[in-house]
Length: 209
Image (tube, rainbow, N blue to C red; front, side):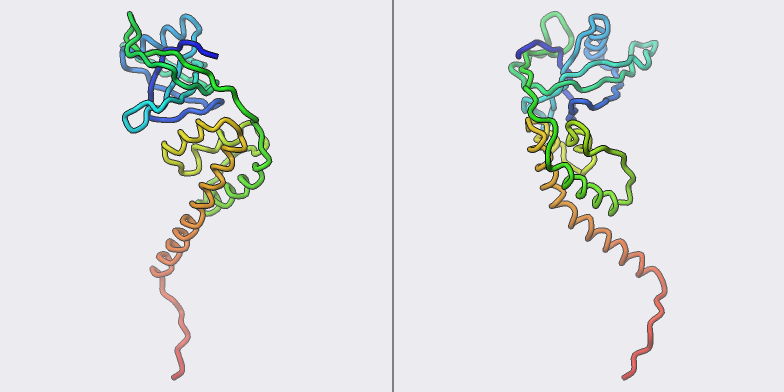
């Protein structure tokens, strides 16, 4: 399905279901958000990576106008809806300050996967090593989207997750990433432990020669 969206390129990846708070200060984006509020329209955030638009993004809905400042700036809350592919990009849209373009909505694949329990085990190992408390539900729909920002992916890797259409593919990608990361994190923890030990007096038994 193709449709036209006003576009707000950002150097980040937003996933369906994700809540994103934005401070809107540029005149072109103030115009874009005002129109979305007045007309109850959605807008798109195409990922802008390495100074280019590789093509995928997320359709967004403004859920709350949190604050409007006297000078026209705004704080808004928005939520990711669906993944799209850019068909064309026009900057600016004729008669507007902001960019826009035609997009093709990506049909979502399966939103559950049998790999969830393995991914959960890897996540628990990571967060135990890092001594971080987290709250997530591996039985939730599109579990990969809920944890992808919390496992140390680069923005390029987060973008790759966005391009994968099934939950199984996304979970396998995260499991492989954690397979690579966990030994490094574990070794860092061992190193930190050695450093801490070296800062203390040790009680050593005298050697008998």
